[in-house]
Amino acid sequence: MSEHGDHDDPPVGYRNPPRHTRFQPGRSGNPRGRPRARRDGASLLGEVLGEKVRVTMGGRSRKVTVEVAILLRMREQALKGDLRAARELLAMRRASLAETDGGAAVPALASEDLAILREAGIVIGGEGEP
Image (tube, one colour):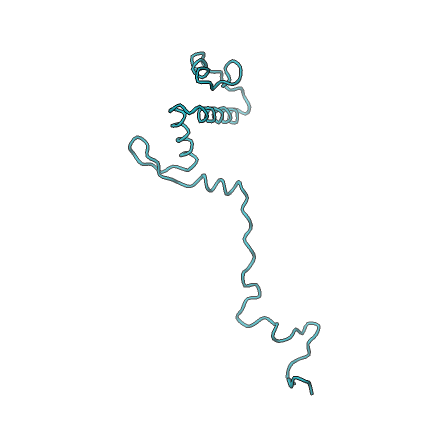
């Protein structure tokens, strides 16, 4: 006889865990499941910038992506005289032109445009380079 008085329990040992620690019927062995993978920054940024927001332009309401809304806001700030917004917008334009042309030279600015940019303090480089 055993001390506990349980004669019908099978022996505990290799491949025979105690009854109270075995998987219970109807209950998962992994209740929370595998944790979700962390999302990388590029996909998260793409998702955030791709969301649609409502923007009023010329008295009409339009739905555009967050990315387009940011560019529109930068354009408005540049037109109101914000030099930092103007520099950033022009730099983005130059980068996109260089990308689409496969590294070809960005066209030089007209002398009148260059003079206006110099007055505003936007021109950093030499002739024809904002």
